[in-house]
Image 1 (cartoon, rainbow, N blue to C red):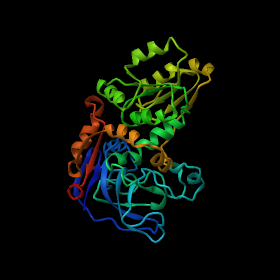
Image 2 (spheres, helix red, strand yellow; image 1 turned 45 degrees about the horizontal axis):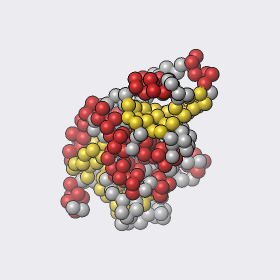
Image 3 (cartoon, rainbow, N blue to C red; image 1 turned 60 degrees about the vertical axis):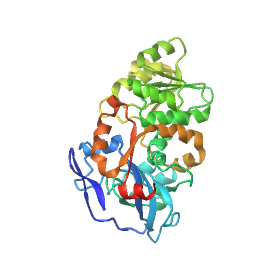
Image 4 (spheres, rainbow, N blue to C red; image 1 turned 90 degrees about the vertical axis):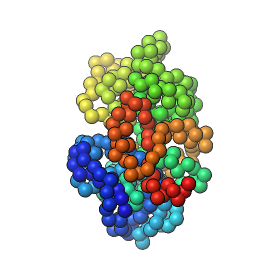
Length: 350
């Protein structure tokens, strides 16, 4: 098969490699039908994830078809179409029972494209397949379904749920990338009074309007608007910069919630001298993907139609190097998420 292989910081190539095989009885082999590149993959290729060894196939998000299962896999069978969770769960340890798959103590966590070969390939071995794959509804678009691997669980678990979005709340989402836009859509399920998207990119603000934001604004206008009111009940940080986090602390109301999703690669100042008396709650976390099955049940065709707008391009998996280049300039270009299909699989389904 062919796959995108990491060879050191900034070095990756689309090349021929050996097909994966069942290694553990809890494994499944999956034919990849759709995959993508996210910020975590970009950081891995840049050498910012030291645990990723040269020779590793990158990628941790995909949709595909089960081709073979190990002797201890019981929830999926050959022929099932599934979404692969970016976080693997053993399904048995205390952390997994608590829904904290990212803290699995029996060998799970972030495995694909990190500790084992990932999804930017024609086929992939999936550890702990019973608890790390979810069957897809028959009518769901397979390209949009890739968002269930990580983007949608992250938006819900770390943003909407941790932020305690509720009916009548004023919700501000700082950052209109794929996760921020997904948080806008999912927050709408809880009937907030107002959902405001904030970003520095006009293209991404336009995207926020298309997926259902009540308002899409530059940061300065947001501050001026909320200064005449108590502030936002929930502020979801989905940009991952020091400036965006400080903005969140300036617009949250007393007693409100700041739910941090963004991956912060630089130190962030926490102004407790200003915040200590506001009684705010700040939450952080790693996505667990324990909510994926619930999201597959709850999100309606209307929600999925809005979320499909996050997919801004589609191409063959062999063009993956160009997709990494697009991802590295996405903030400037307004690109959101590119879905890739192996050429042979794409031709077979068109």
